[in-house]
Length: 279
Image 1 (cartoon, rainbow, N blue to C red):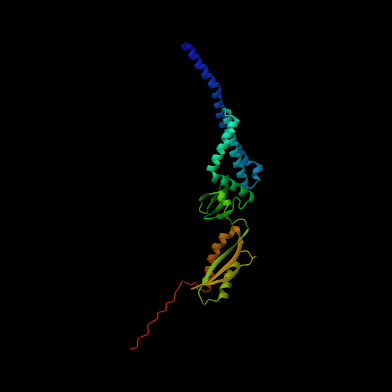
Image 2 (cartoon, rainbow, N blue to C red):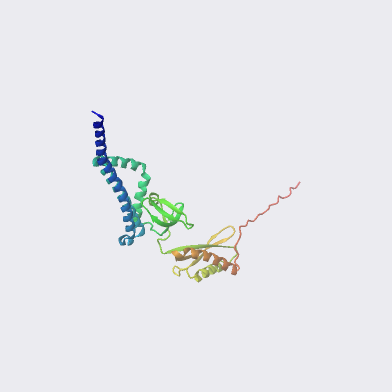
């Protein structure tokens, strides 16, 4: 076999390789690039579609994220099939990889299941103010694995859905009205009826305090240095903090104007002298 024959065989092999494996690789790369672009365009259109706009925000975001992830996985599976990976072998690889990934990502799968539970049972929705454990904030988004909270000081907290679905969650926004208790302490010897009347008048004069249930002022405790009262009122959920701060200031001003003393902690000290010894 001379050099020309060897050269011809090498060129024929390279040509066959380029027309088979090379074209497949090119098709797979094109499929990934074009498919990813089309998925991005589809997701953007779905966010603006009327069907999803009519849904609750948390549900629509979750479904769109699911569609996005599923389509991208299908694109990569299709690219692998184009490259010549047998379907049976591919299924076996996916099964084995799925088991390994499942064991490695138990927390993520728990978060995924937790996200579905949150959407089904709806303990909270987008826009609600919630508290769970040591975190609290307004629900900005419910994604596949995490719920995003925004705190009053504009911090962002990513809470795992698995943890939220398996622990207690306090939803401050679910009800339209909330109860508010304002504490007030007075010195011993103060007329308790006067204090309760003053506190009630302050609450009844506030425009954001609800008339039903009616405001109530009660003596709560008799502490060592003070008589502790509370003023209990109801208001709309959106007015809670406004009523809280305004009533606190107005209660202080009303107690001062009626000459009701606000006590400081005090202690009585008794000194006992020893009796002189009789000799």
